[in-house]
Length: 361
Image (cartoon, rainbow, N blue to C red):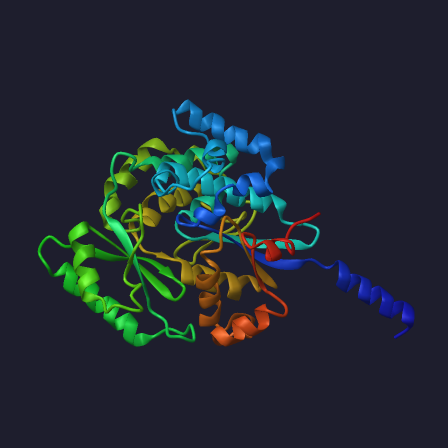
């Protein structure tokens, strides 16, 4: 091969885009360290942010500009569904807009829990007006009082591999709780190396007694979280279907992976089924984020995975889900840490050094 041919080949390699799977976060990712996220990174998104504030003002809700600009972080203010959902959506969508499309080809999108609604927006299945309407409506459903709650518990070992013993313990506790009068407990989210459980107060309290304590940290209650992805939210699902018509949904422009591992493409999406899944199955059945990531890795073969901000609460669970299918040749936590420190393939936009590898300057 001539030197000219070598140069042409090198140029082709240099200009080829990297394929990326984009992951949208769910509730619980806008914490104390994320206060001011929009002000730090997205002063150029004023029109987009203003449109969200205008919508919320019409509902007599506090604007996200004001929420993000508070002098101090408040659990009571920033973690309630009606505030957290819109705030996280604004941060995540703004991050998505900043991804360098000359460097990265977005081959699919997915999300965790509430992140499914954000994924719909990323893919264009919800336009900007439809996205804030769906996300804000779903986030505000329990403004007058939460239905049930959630707790999180690990089901992995120290190497980030599935621990069958922990899995059996969790399943056994779920069965025991549901056999106790007045108690309800369900698997809510399969979150990489963790299981999120949803239940009524009696069920959660009994689960906290029955689950072995780990490091004085687990089982851990999730503050201001309702019994998402469980039958306890039947009335929320019914109300959502009445308030949010199918007409809000459009054909996606980017493939979407849902909480059952199904792929919704621009060529085959049935909008009636998408509407039904989003407001019924997704609300009432367990959300398998682990499977969603596995499908993204195996079916789309991305070069990298980009996690949208705010924060990086999904970094560990995404890595654990990738390890579970030996994606990127990661077989355990040590592999992930070793490779990630040299040539990161998991990029969290909530981490400044990794953000700089994603955005266009």
